[in-house]
Length: 246
Figure 1: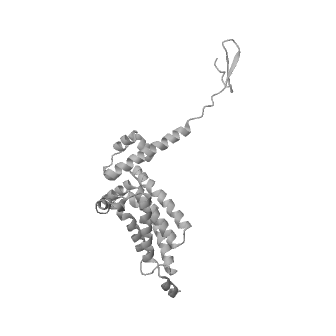
Figure 2: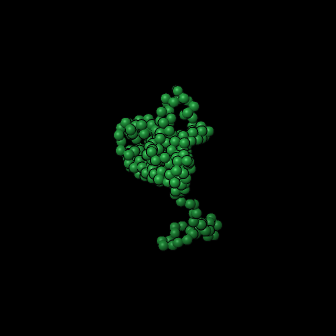
Figure 3: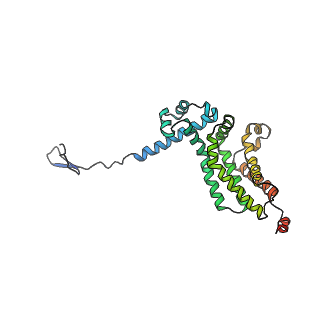
């Protein structure tokens, strides 16, 4: 029986015996949460596929159709989520850089001792390079092509952190803890180089020193200890000189 216009509540129908029966309204939840989960999974597949394509071909050589096919989606979905290839490219880079940026600011806010801060940054960078092999290939393409996307993201995510770390080292120099004859920026470059070089030149090291390109926790811990020791022994002012400065 049709519900009269304007009525609300459960629908009453007659049973086959003529007795009215009440059918409660459906309580099935709207599947919006499922749609959100599916959307997140789809974006993740597109980002993963884009990362591999950009690593293999660079920004200029990458094709959205190939990325869509690998992700198992229509190319239109890439435009829906990321606007265009540049938007996807930026999202791929930012996915790797943003967590490191957030962790860096947490580190700067929580550690004010020299060795603790440097140890934290060396550990962070080692884990970053070990976990982002495809990103290193993308960065090499970036350097050759001169794309501006990495420059933009570096200014947003990385440069402020380096500037804050440099100010910290200058303060430690003024306090007599760090030797003043080496510029703070050079200390940062030295630390970053010791971390990055074996990963950037991994193919060469796999031939001449295969043990240094291992990415397991034991190998990374050993590398962290060595870099921190070399840095601290090189930049910390000897105790006697610290007393003389005081």
